[in-house]
Length: 309
Image (cartoon, rainbow, N blue to C red; front, top):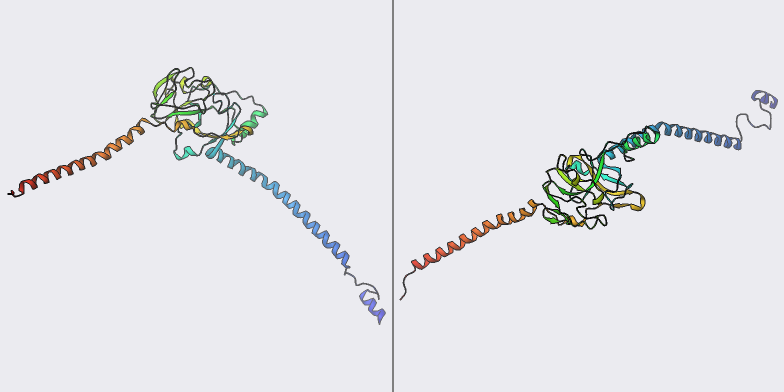
């Protein structure tokens, strides 16, 4: 019976049943299966990364364009006209968001503006090299300043409606107030430089701009023969320079100097006085009328009183 049982099942006494591996074999098979699944997951992740990379690059470019258009943009300082505030080769970040909310530049701010016409020469020719192509691509998305942009950077001295002047050997005058420029004027410079001017009334929606290095800045003083009389249209302003971003050892902000706090417009100076007179006049008239009524009442009382004695 034992031999018959062995013939029917294909097993012999003392042998392990077929198809039932031992524990070590099962463990090895399980580890091999896990390794295979891990390899497949890594391969899938790599394929997924390379598929998503173009999308990530596209999103990054779109965000950079939005930031450049609406928020901030990098500009390179091409000359010494803003020394010592800015040095040639500095990179500044320009706030482009504020003008979108209708806030016009204020006195004392450093602004970047497009050439209003005739301030700069022709743009430098493109050499067609790889370096030029790379710079053009990076400047397009706002990661590098453009070599072709016809932009300038100066300090706002006066705004629309202001009267600005500077006599030889004197200080810049804005609405009759002397401008304190000691915080930023280049050492050894005079406020007028070699070009006294004015008095000039700045047209509305225009700016009178000057470089901090007065002896080395072709600013509003030198373009009075052009449209606007040397003033720059507000519409040409790209934005306000807010920070020096490069080189690292020159990191810093570009605040409005304290000297501009005392400058007011002629209209602003007259308005409080006019409002004071307008407010006081009714009060004075009311008081005079009240005193007059009291005097009349006193006289009437005297006349109507019976004689004594």
